[in-house]
Amino acid sequence: MQIATPVLALFRVCIYAFLLAPIVVVVLASFNAGNFLTFPPQGLSLRWFWTFLQNDVFLDAIAYSAILAAASTAVSLVIGTMAALYFVRHAGREAETVRVGVLLPLILPEILTAIALLFFFYEIGIGTEHKIALFTGHVLMTLPFVFLNVTTSLQGRDDSVELAARTLGASRYTAFRRITLPLIAPGLATGAVFAFIISFDTFGVSFILKGTGSAPLPIQLYDYLRFNFTPEAAAVSTVSILLTLVLVTAADLLFGRKA
Amino acid sequence: MTEVSLRALQKLYGKTLALKGISLDVAHGEFVSLLGPSGCGKSTTLKCIAGFEEVSDGRICFDNKDISRKLPEDRDIGMVFQSYALFPHMTVAQNLAFGLEMRRLSKSVIAERVAKAMEMVQLTPYADRFPKALSGGQQQRVALARALVIEPAILLLDEPLANLDAKLRNEMRGFIRDLQKRVGITTIYVTHDQDEAMTMSDRVVVMFDGEIAQAATPEEVYDRPASERVARFVGNANILELPVMAVRDRAAGGFDLTLPGGTPLHLAAPAPWANGALRVMARPEQISLTDPGFGQLGGRVAKRYFSGGHVEYTIDTDCGPLLVLGPTTQAVHEGDAVGLTFDASRLWPMAPESGAKP
Ligand SMILES: Nc1ncnc2c1ncn2[C@@H]1O[C@H](COP(=O)(O)OP(=O)(O)OP(=O)(O)O)[C@@H](O)[C@H]1O
Ligand SMILES: [Mg+2]
Image (cartoon, rainbow over all chains, first blue to last red; front, side, top):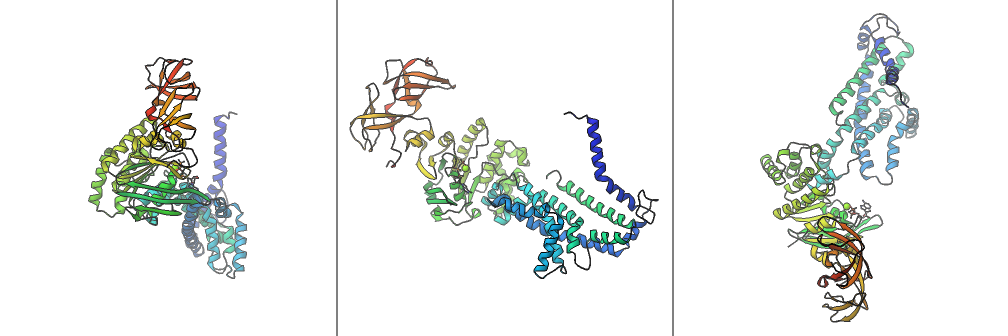
């Protein structure tokens, strides 16, 4: 059936509006001059950004989330790349098991992964007091994104380039560093950006596993919004949206065309 | 001098024996082809020589030194892959330099040898191109130069021409062959194309089911195949089963056979197993067409295919359909009655399939 182009265009606009409207609302609300989180904003002002920049709770939470995201991304990159290499190059009959295993945190509702980990860490006597529980949760949540992106950049190439490097005198490690790594770099970069953002934004796992003490940004925001309803929360969100945007744009500029 | 020596090589994949005891000596500077149908173990043999696969049993020696347990990077080989396996993120010059960098040569030496290698394969203008921006034939030459620039002791090629079109493939055959002779490098070449193996090699190794069926010069393999299977694999073969009338010398050769119709046919080749009847092979170009009533055997033209340089006939005879290659100048048409003459000096007896010929 032929759909008229204007209808299609309208449809497209509606989808974008649906996806982007909440973000626009939050961003606009963060420039609110009034005392309450309302839309449309009552006058424009940067006062809530100023308030937020003086609020150690949020600054700490952002720093905490950034460190957590960076650390879990780093670990995911290593484990995810190894899993992807195994899956594409070496796994025989067990390939599908490996794939499903790694992707399980993506397939299951996040809350299930979180609760399973909660049980697990209490069962082995560690509990959530140590950051290791939260950290493990974040690695699990981010792993599938690294795995998927690296897998994609590996698939469609056989291992003959690495073998060629070996015959030319490269050790296994050198062949990986000089040949494999550059080839999967776009996948690694995209995977890293995804992993970082997922870790930075994820709520369920952080909520269940955070323990006491400092908490990631989404949890802090949630706690804050339960008792305060000021545009400061919107200002925090705007900053975090900006951060995401910068990351994605940078990755796209660096690797977009190659990926 | 023996450069490469495979001794009773076996390779087991799980429960399947892909190589069932391959023994082969390749002399210094020799060009040897491994020829066989898909799945016969050609690539597996090459992978074992390169060190990508561990051998399950037997030994591989280079220059009489056992290297079966050495890593690929320590074997001093150059390899060309069917997919070329060029490094896509490096330019042509960088691809060629890689192996020299691994050998920690100085920048100036590397630059010099890369330049020389690029000249050798006529790619100098493409030094700064990435592989993606080259044609298949050019990529092929880069792969060849990259394998040779490190001046390895042995060159291995696994179906390097399989991805090229027919015309380019013919060109590259000559190119690789000439280059190999010029450099004088010991070469093992894997292919499933018998023309390729014949035209390029000093020696052809025919493999079936993980075993060597025959290892000999192209002429020998073509004219004196070790078995019917080899005969059929390396070219078109007419096999005639003919009764033996008299034996002059079983081992040295000398049999009188009869064709249907009673015409005698003399076979000069040895056939110690001869007993009552012999299966003999005649290549299509070893049979010529004559006027009906003449020749050693009568027949009728069933099919005629003109193919430029010559004409291919299928002739129905009392020995079954025979394939004959004739000159284009002969005016013979489908349905015509013809006579056939055999080039008796080149008739070759087929050993029975079970029990190899000595
Ligand atoms: N990694 C492997 N695991 C299991 N079996 C294998 C493996 N590689 C090869 N084989 C088997 O070993 C046999 C020989 O394979 P090989 O690749 O050497 O064949 P080939 O002669 O190169 O054929 P082709 O012309 O198709 O490339 C085949 O039966 C194949 O199925
Ligand atoms: Mg093969």
